[in-house]
Length: 225
Length: 126
Image 1 (cartoon, one colour):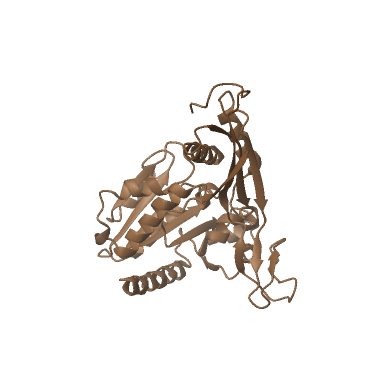
Image 2: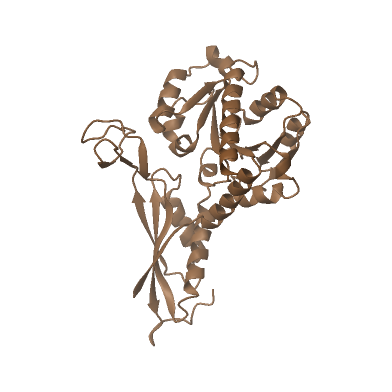
């Protein structure tokens, strides 16, 4: 019997495509952000508010993933930015190949910011690199404040936690400080913004984070080129 | 629930590797799964066994090494296993946030055995 060392990642094919996408994003100066949450935490609503707030001339696009329907793309198309739906047909996450395929007929040189809205799921999307510059996790106050402890992987890997639906705080037994504390237990120093996509409360904090990220990415691109 | 896809990727990797050993068959494939990788070893094993059942590789064993989250302390160069999200270095009590292990989903090794005269069944045609 012989033992042969393999020493490679199981998802090496996905990671290869993701690395290629990341290099292309950097080459064309595109900041790609991967939004992840449970179903119904408000990823699409947050994107609606964001697209509404961004100047029309900004070069922004969205890829939005779901198992079925074009519903989210239809909601997001109202803001006159390019939007494409990825329907996975049953797969519980997006992978790098899906991103590559759906970007095929967009010119990356025409974009500065690309949002990827993942399939609603806190587990599987955390394993698949999409070539993004950062993952963002959305948690709403109608969920449990212990979610970061129950699903540590995604909170560990995300740069930002968006605590959404804060307009409901008076009506639900959600301890927002405990939620933030739990997120930082899993991911020390994690950045957190508290918003309501319904009322618009706190959105300026999110937009400020986004603009800072865009600025940092721009200088990164300039250094690389 | 993406363990089926992972099981399939593992089998693909075994298949590719086995092309280099045409006179052998695979006995055991070793994986490393990190605590923070969001994979359930039991679900993965279940999917893996379902996929190899009634094939030439039905006896292929999946060995999973579970890797806990480990942090490295810059202050005193100590590496330790993190329990209950407590990032304080047990040696110097500094707050150590540099995660060095616990996120992996890796193929570690493959054990292959040469077909002998007594090997049951034909060569794998998978």
